[in-house]
Amino acid sequence: MIKREYYINQIRGFYDSDLIKIITGVRRCGKSVILEQIMEEIRDKSDNIIYLDFDDRLTTESVETWKQLVDYVEGHKGSSLCYVFLDEIQVVEDWAIACKTLRRHNCSVFITGSNSKLLSREFTKELSGRYVSFRIRPFVYRELLAYAEELGRDMSIADYLIWGGFPKRLEFRTAEEQRRYLNDLDRTIVQNDIIERYKIRKSAEFKKVAGFILVSNARIYSAKSIADYMRSHGITCSANTVQKWIAYLEEAYVIDQAARYSKKAKKELEQSRKLYNCDVALNSIRCGGGRYDLTHNLENIVYNELLYLGYTVTVYDNNGKEIDFLAERDSLRYYIQVAYSIAEEKAYEREFRAFHNLSQIDKKIIITNDEIDYSTSNVEHIRLKDFLLRESL
Image (tube, rainbow, N blue to C red; front, side, top):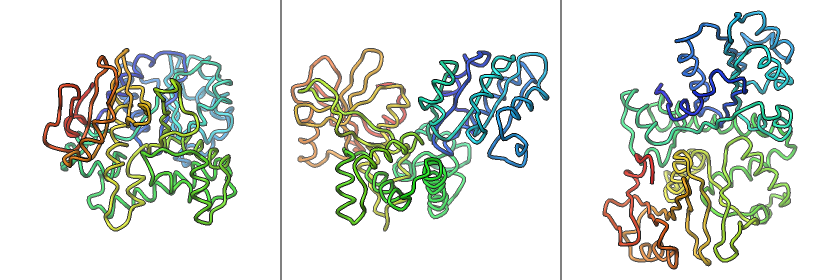
């Protein structure tokens, strides 16, 4: 497995800190591998390391409560600073008490979990600022490319646009095998991480709503519009219920909500947001007949890549003309349009028209899958294959 230096570099400065290191993200995005890579680095200076994987109940069956966890660590650690790695900690009863106790007894604690319940108000209040958190995402293209090379495989942009960046899917050779793995992963996330965790009684309705949201990525929706659509298809659920279910999907890191900012109103538009999948595979597995939604997947991928590059991303309403992204970092602002192609005149005019009347100070960018350079004196055109390898705009 490739070393995910981008994330490890953010965590490295906290190795010896008494702050609890929380590593979160959607299932199978690579959290456990990052944990292993951190342990490898620490082994260069210490062998006082304890690792417990709570997905492996064969080795952790006797550790079910916070007290049992503390007793286990105390019985196995050495006298120097002990590095404690707890994988999928959320299954331990009152895990936060264990973490707070261990950090007071010469332990540097690292924990992972598949649900941001670890970072809910309840637990952040309980930890009282004694933690630092890091969100891990599925592979971006450059990581996928490096891992494919390690496995001796080719990796095209078209493959990334369809099947996304969940690392393990590269271990399967055929599209059928990858689809089966991704379908099973999808069921695990929806069934185990959301329905069971939140005890959703209307599980069939929730699955329908979740499926609709995931196949409708990179689109603007409100909870009311989704509830109305479901009602028109014979599925009854209130806007409040839909809003709650959207929050569950976000808490499990399945989706992200991008806020919309209005230039005219000079404020965030609260009634509707744009929803993006954590990985475009969650759209593609819901598409049949080989008709994949490459247009919206491309926009979703650009969104995920911008977050990876450290930009704050919102959707910008330019007096009624939507600009896909306003990306901000280091006091710089970038207005970004995304399209699969602008080769046709109508598409070209539509995408460039969105930039009308914007400040000349801020940079304007259009990202497409076209090979031809459509840059103008005011707008830079970046080919998708070039954007995916950039480290900055």
